Image 1 (cartoon, protein in one colour):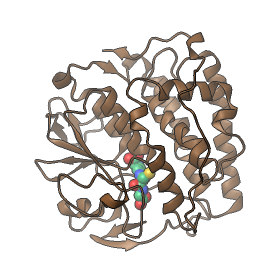
Image 2 (cartoon, rainbow, N blue to C red):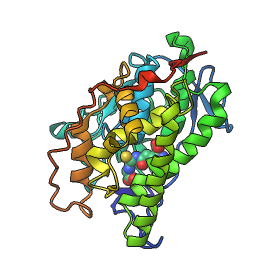
Image 3 (tube, rainbow, N blue to C red):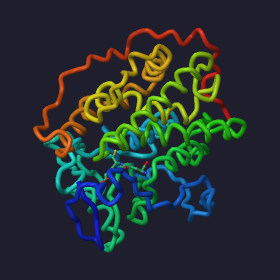
Length: 333
Ligand SMILES: N[C@@H](CCC(=O)N[C@@H](CS)C(=O)NCC(=O)O)C(=O)O
């Protein structure tokens, strides 16, 4: 675990002392945008034209942010257009590695041993955290974008002409609802588990765990009469919630002490989780072995002996009862 300062790697745990025990996530810095015609991104980010075979996705299979991009890649039929390398699940003192002996795929594009080398290949003076996912441009030999929320949006539409896949996970008529849900879910759940788990102060931990479970209660109520978060359509909001839910009972409940309840204890959330897990293509993106090994073996301030628990047994392929609610599936643009 560490970061680059002026292109030099420093092994350093998150600094929660200067923030009163709070984990504060740094914003992603690389924000160029892949679009169908090379047009700029929605906030004016420099655009790059979508092309088959030009981009490579670097992920860690354990990472919930990277997992969003892997699901979108699969559901949008991009597997043949965007190839992938995955890191070792273990994040050691040099950060993410491509050590095949530990379960990485290796880096088939640049042949680097450590993920931070990709950041300094294009910018030898890079300063900041070195994160997955990262989308690599083979032509310009640099990371295009390292913000998963934006990669999800690009994958949703930029390659449609090339794939013929018109599934729209962010349809115009649902955007306001999706944006509102995303904001709540990001702050209290996706990032909420990290704010609880990395807190180094009792009161800070308690505040974030309380906010997390208050949000889970809101979602549980919503899912009583909505098949998906935005209603009858499956959208990116569901994909973004799924990657945290699927890690919850296996990791966040124990390792991050988010343990008032398990997802299994919520009737609607647990059945919803199983429906999404069983959605064609999704289960193949879930690697619970990498997920558990990553968290329990990479955070030595939290779990110094790096013992990985044997349970829980999740059985995500059990039946679910979500058919009782109306579904429109994914909107076709
Ligand atoms: N905003 C980024 C966050 C990505 C992120 O924090 N990834 C974690 C893995 S789960 C990471 O690489 N952390 C390394 C670090 O913080 O040093 C995104 O959503 O893409």
